[in-house]
Image (cartoon, rainbow, N blue to C red; front, side):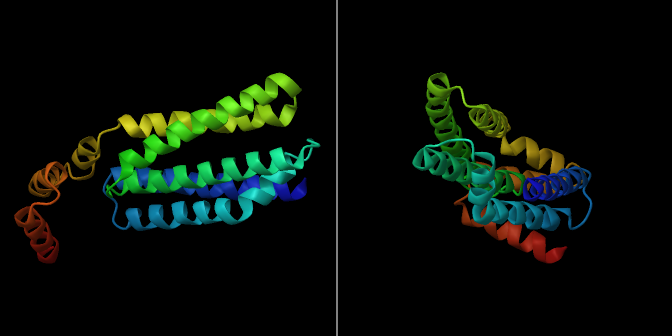
Length: 189
């Protein structure tokens, strides 16, 4: 259980740093986007590599090892994927909404499977998994419906010219003229 507490401390610290740098990005502090990227990648890699082991520590109560392993892998992949899609959303990278939609649908399906299993077995660890999944569903649903244009307006409120270029790019990301203007704008800075 000591390993679990250490994991929770590391997880809480890294997520707090992500929140801090997200706030700093909203107030246009230089290099905060780099730190957001770094810390979200760190937590995603930790979930991907250590998440199965950590979830198995939490899921030890079950006698059905195959089901425990399935739940552990599913939760680990969903958390890691949601963290990465959050990174894509905050950095205004492509394919974010589709990724959140896939996470949302997958989380709901896994939640239904876990709920059915909980109704049959009444195991306490399944409640913890359902709470994690509900958090993921809330995060995915919220981020899915926050338009990227709103983030652009927040990020570039002090620079209307760049904001307008980014909004044009968001509406037509294949337009070579807009891409050229953005590239030239970045070179001029």
